[in-house]
Length: 298
Length: 310
Image (cartoon, rainbow over the protein chains, first blue to last red):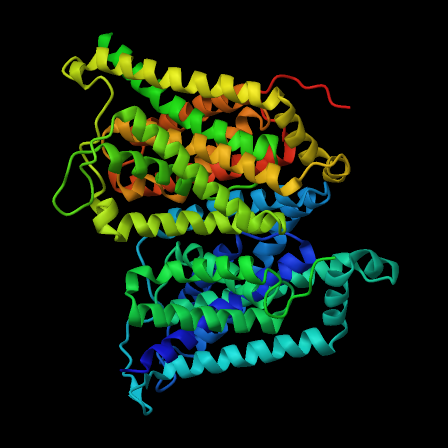
């Protein structure tokens, strides 16, 4: 038996985990499940595609399939995706949030998701596209596992982003404010935390990480308008499995779901892959709805 | 002229089936405040249940039960109600968003089963030869369309009246009370969870019935009938009509379906063929933006009777 599925799961799990960080933060701070989060991924991936087209190609960095232009484009696209999220919040979510019915905001995010996704299909058509069509040779690293240079680079990038994110939430003033606001909004206001700033930070971080995940999917798989929608259920499942509000939980949840999906592909059949996230979600909801690192509702 | 009559009947039948699904959503969302993003999944459960029970035997798929159409419809409603009830049971004691996420998952899984469980659902080719009501007059298309319109209108009217009675009954009052002020309702000794599960299951039954009616109206079903776009259309119909109103649900369905079909015609006539797919996505963008605008500026919809509040 090949252990390749462990690596595949780890990589899929990293993408899911990066997406789940945004969902878990939006949920714990803005108090709604954002159905448009998957579309931030797709918009981020297409954003990087457009920017890299504007910069123009150059030689890729030796073993990798991409070079500096794509890395630069990803940074720009992260900013653009954050702007998109902030614009959407200003136009739509903030106005509805002010009315106090969180479920209306969820519905608005559902409508926005549909519009965003189909706008992508309008602009770029539904056929898949790629950053690079170069073929990478996977190197064996023992125990029947093969890995490409791109995969190594992107796993390292995920590790850096997640570590940075964790330090930011634990050590920085803004991160402390965000945690305080998610735990007790009223008390956070009383001690003078600038709520608008917390909300802005939440959108920027969530959207930027979604964009990174989208570019990662784009490099390793392909870029499609539906890529975000397909990842939405695993992302939600990962956020709930990890416990809403917990950044390490979201990443761990993502890895568990990625590995389970890969195991399902290996042992059950690739066509049932998408059902795995749902089974895990139902199990968590029935057995331990607060998730691995969550706190019980008060 | 006679063609127009036939087409009119066909259009109205399709719209009324959407109206029926919207009625189910109105019970879940309009009356009880339960958010369902998996409508397409529940409709598909109903459609497949009835199709499998009534369609003739096929070599590579379970079938050949030869149930009467009405039996299929009843089974569709019951099974969909059970699926919705279980979804509600698993999530409704938790935060309201969890129901939304789970229903989204239900739609994904139902789509997956429809596509891959070939022995049950026929896979991508779907189920064909679903018996159509009054198939005896099938060779006279106009009469056939009118008779079918009659059947669908009768089912819709029956559901409408039943839901009107239900929403005015003490049961309906409890649901409204739960939506408006949960704490007060709980203080009166009403069990939040059980009422919500009931409402979600009954709404699911209506959706499943609608799916079955649609399957028998068309005579053929395939997985790609039940994509997220369907869920989205139904939501647009309810929001345009005015959530909370059964009359609004049906009128909203007819109006939105007319806009949908009409804009499809316009784009077919104006847009060159190679850009048709793009025009179709722009159509969905427009409906999405419209949904958001309604939420922002006219959350009560357009066709609901004026309600006096507080």
